Amino acid sequence: MNNYLNRNKALLLSYISLIGVFMVFFQITLGGTVRVTESGLGCPSTGTAISEWPLCGGEIIPDFDFHTAIEWGHRVSGASIGLLIIFISAFSIKYFGFKSKQSMIALNLLILVLIEGVLGGITVLTELAWWVRLIHLGVSFIIIYYMAYLYSITKSEGTNNSFIEKLNPNKEKALYFLLPSVFILMLYGSVIVGLGANSSCMSWPDCMGQWVSFKDHNYLTHMLHRYLALFIGILILYAAHFVGRSSAKKSFVKNISRSLSIMFVLQIIFSVLLVTTGFGNWLRIVHLSFAAAIWLFCSWLYIEYRLFTHSKH
Image 1: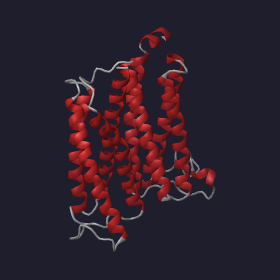
Image 2: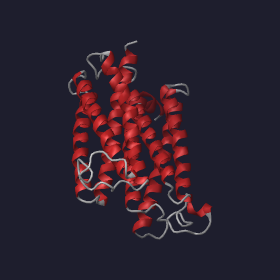
Image 3: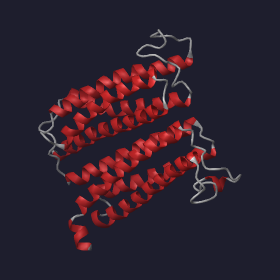
């Protein structure tokens, strides 16, 4: 068995890390479900902090109602990701070596998931303080980035055949600017929800007949998100286009580029539906899921191109 694992270590770790990507994506979606359904305090209070978290009402498996089931499922999903990352760390160190890139990424993931667990506890103990939830979401985006990085670096094994040419300097700068821009946009969306400004504009594309106004704080907060989405959305579509054109046919990057374009267009459609239908709960969940997918695909474009350029040196 040990010989088999050693021979197939790259293939196995790539599959495991890809499973990890889907698990983290599901966790982000489930976190959005917790927020939208207001189930963050779904575990019944016992009056003592140690019983509030990580236990649920002082029990590992509590009595379920709707809100308890959602919050408990979110905690179990997070714990499962933690166990997977512990396994990935042990596997990487044993079969790739402690100083390997795989092990360094895995250890970063281990640190991040521990931080995420602590933030989850603080979120509950502070009764869902919005700024803690913001940091909690931000760390989850970083975790899915590193999980995607682990998948890409393991499947490529030091080579990357996704690209047919290097990007010119201006397009490289645009690609490198893309990731922090999307990260800011995603977190700003969470800020809007935390400040209660997400439903302050009930029309689209303007806001109740206005395009710019500094009189209402919630209005300005909401509309700034739309303007940011417009600017960064153009950058997303532009990056997907030029990266796709520079990638090999039927390559991983080509598929990601196309998926990113489609996902962003769908996000715009669902954003319009979200506003015009009165911010229905299931649309809010889809909106967050699409945002997480866009972040993941942008991350993969950046990661794959960085691996390609490093392989050429």
